[in-house]
Length: 105
Image 1 (cartoon, helix red, strand yellow):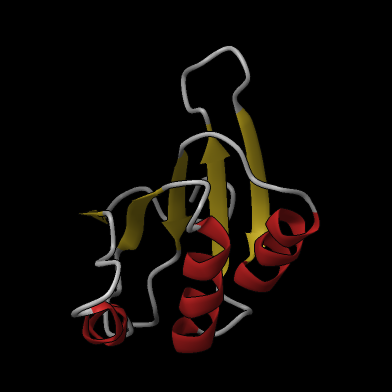
Image 2 (cartoon, one colour; image 1 turned 45 degrees about the vertical axis):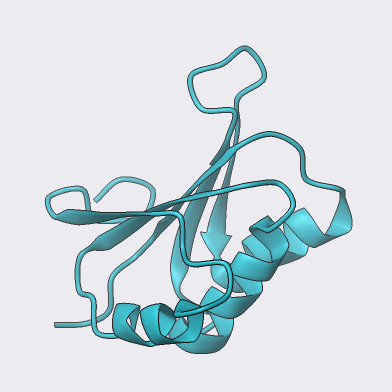
């Protein structure tokens, strides 16, 4: 475990669909037991965290990295609800990597 997220097994999801197929894909992730890694833009990070919280539960552990491997890299960890509150309070900038703990096996 690293920061509350399992590192031994993970799945890279890339970007979630923006419109068509988004809800279907989110519902499929409900059954995922591995740590999920996604990309997101600053324009959609709040929406994605909201959607993930609604489907997976706001108490699901998550870690968000902004501008990964760059000079202004920032990280936030907590539950989906906590990181949503963090990014809702201030306009998000930069590219995001979102890591969300998998569900119980």
